[in-house]
Length: 500
Image (cartoon, rainbow, N blue to C red):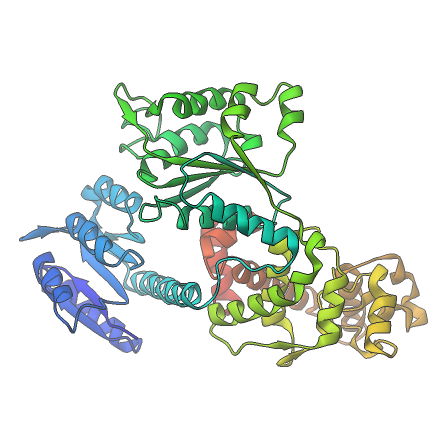
C-alpha cells in the first residue's frame, strides 16, 4: 500500500500524525509546503502518488486549496483531507465542494482524525478496485437480442451530441447506458455528472442543478456550482426526470432551448456547454396528459428514445451477470470470489427480478457476505428467491426434498416452520419474519435472559452490513438508505464491531 502524505508547516502536527499512523501500521511521508508535494509527484518515485493526502489549508509557500486543485488534475481519485482552523471554515467547505474527501477542523481530536484517515484509506482502496474492474470487465453485459439492440443504438449515437431519453424500469441499468453514451461520445474527455431528480427535496433541487450565490438563501454561506456547471464540456444525466417539480421544468426547458441559466440568487447568465441525457421509469406521455409534465419539455428531451429491457425480458443474461457481480462484489469487499452451482443459477434464472439488474447485483452482494461456503447452492439463495411460490421449483431443481434442518437460517422459512407442530402457524408468514419468529421461540425456550439484545444486535448488524455491501462500503450513503444519521451508523458500526 502507498504511504499517506502529510502536508503542514507545523512540525508538531506532522509529528503527532506520523506517530499515530505508525501505531496503526501505516506508513507516512511528510512535507512542509505544497511546492514539495508537487515536486515529489513529478519524480519517478512519487508519480503514483499517496494513498491519501492530508494537507493544511494555509502554509507559507502555497495554499492547500491550490494544492487540492493541482493534485486532483494528476490523481482525480485521490482522497484529500483538508485541515483547517475554525476561522477558515468557509474555505474548507468550498474545498469540500470542489473535490476534497473531507475537512478536519483544528484543533482536532486525534482518534477522530485517525478514523477519518482510515475512512479515506478505505475509499482509496475501493476506487483502485473499481478502476481495475473497469479496466478488465466490460461496462455492460448482455447476450439477449434486446440488449444487442441497445448496444447497436449506443454505437450509432457514439459520435452525436443529440439529447437522448432512456426509458426502462427502475434498476434496469439506465445510468450504465448513459455512461456508455458519454464514454463513446466526442465529450468522453469531459465529466459525467449524474443527478436523481426524485431523490433530492424540491426546495434543494434548483440549487443542486443550477448552483447558488453566497447569501441566496439561509445557509448559503459560500457560492456553489450546480450540476450544469460541474458537467461543463461533458454530459449531465438527469435520472427520474418524470419526477421533476413542474416549476423547475420551466427552468430546465430554458437551458435546453438557449443554453444559458442563472444561479439561484445570481444576476449573471452562465453558458451551459453540456449534453443532457434523461431517464425515467414513468410513462411521460401519460404524465403530460395528467398535466404534471410540460409537453414542450417532453418534446425537447425526447429527441432519441432508447428503451432498456427489464431483466425478465432477457433471462439468458442472468447467468453471465450473476458471475460478473459475484466477482465484482468479491473485489470490492476484498475476499475470494464465490462460485455458484448450476442448480442455483437455474433457480435464479426462474426468478422474475422485480428490481431488475440492480436487484441481481444486490443479491450477489448478499451471497458474497452471507453464503457459508465458497460454492453457493440453492439452499443459500436469499428469501425473495426462495419464496413459497418458488418452493416446488427449488425442490425439483435440487432433485430432492429441501433441507429442513436450516430452520434457523433465512432460507426456506415456510418449509422449516411446517416441520414442527408447535410452529405450524408460521406457515402463514412468508420471508424473514417467520425465520425470525422461529429463532426467537428457540431462544425463548432456553434459560437465556438476553434474547432482545441478542436478536436486536444480529438484526442491526445484518442490516448495516447489507447496506454497506449495497453502497460498496460508503457509510454516508448506507445511512441515507437506512434512514438513519451519519453519527448513528458510525456508532453502530463501532458498537457491533462491524468491519465496515
